[in-house]
Image (cartoon, rainbow over all chains, first blue to last red; front, side, top):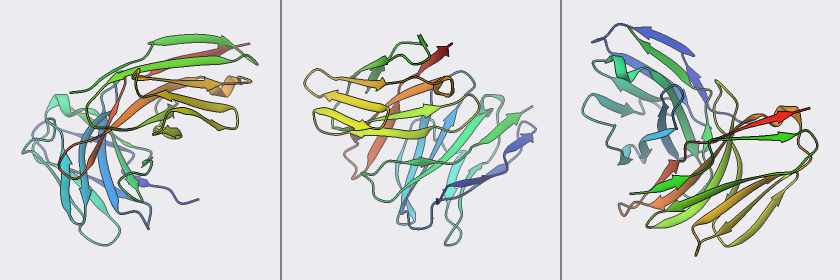
Length: 113
Length: 113
């Protein structure tokens, strides 16, 4: 069964450093998403991406965040200058159409020290 | 904005039936999803309602009443492996040609022998 994959599974970084989280969505899906979940809290929408551009972003997704689809398979989330409060689980998701259910990857646990 | 409410925790007995309720207030409603999330793992899709009524999927059923802003997830023949958090998520049209999925805080279900 096709699945969304994410790398790395765990990333530890120092405050102020840049991190890139990687995702490979399901191959025939067209809509891509990033969510985050701070430990013990709810899943929060960050951004959606379609046709090589951002279609929607939340208030959390400020100027230090960016997304990119550098090739036909990868979808990345970059955090330019990490803060302690960026520590969270980051989930990538994809869907075939914008109205379809979203399938989540296993997540990357980001720890900022 | 959107407001999604679901109970924080529930406990039920193996083999029994449990109903997890979700109420929501939103504009541009376009569907309600239920996801299961085991601790430290990604949410996995369970069911989806866009029209009023009951959707049945094996041991899981989900009900929606749009006029009441209410949904429930029904789990039958509970198994120990059903111990997890159950996330109610509302999809709403953002007005920018895309949809945004907003999650509730989740209901942590504990299944006991």
